[in-house]
Image (tube, rainbow, N blue to C red):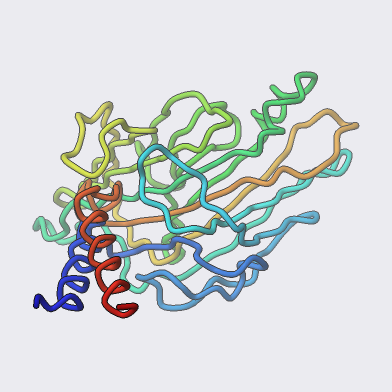
Length: 294
């Protein structure tokens, strides 16, 4: 008789390999509650810190993952709550230290290979539903994933940036590093940034918003942005802020961020379940169950 346990394990390994290999991964698979102190995922040297906020800002864990097409998700998500109270703006920020810095090349030799960063962002529906001040809310709201080089005060920011109504990426002290993507919407959005270090600190960037091709070859890139400034990102931050509402406005917007991945190729950061692998695993599990109940 075939070794059903071995079959099941082989199917499990195969299914896992279908999701690619990442150097950083944060699925926010925590119990519902405060995000601060959460230490799951991979590629970090410590857990999430204590959030800082202006106004009643919060960083918590939600029970479900937002769905972005066929992208593989794990359950759970980060919920960033930024509040506005009359004329006072609000924001929240929470950070986590990376185990290995994400860097440019600094010695003239191309030793750092390209890498990709992806995550899902889902904006609060209220950002779109109240027509009377929706434009001001959208313009003044930011929901961002930041890569931070605190030693040199350099930052790459991805997501919904303040002062715009589009997805994109921007930077601090990295001239030339910035691209605008598509207009924001009230649906979960997958954002992917490719970082291609060249020589002598020149780095190229490509941005995709809701790419159609997941889990396979990299799709054709759009506009490329470049900087000639070096960096070494050691920290990942999540941030949400709101400002510029009408003076009488108040309330909280709760935005989701999920499935943060950093990997060495496109498939690493845009994984999709492979039906054949999932089917094999399911059949092996059924066989084991029948054997145990026989």
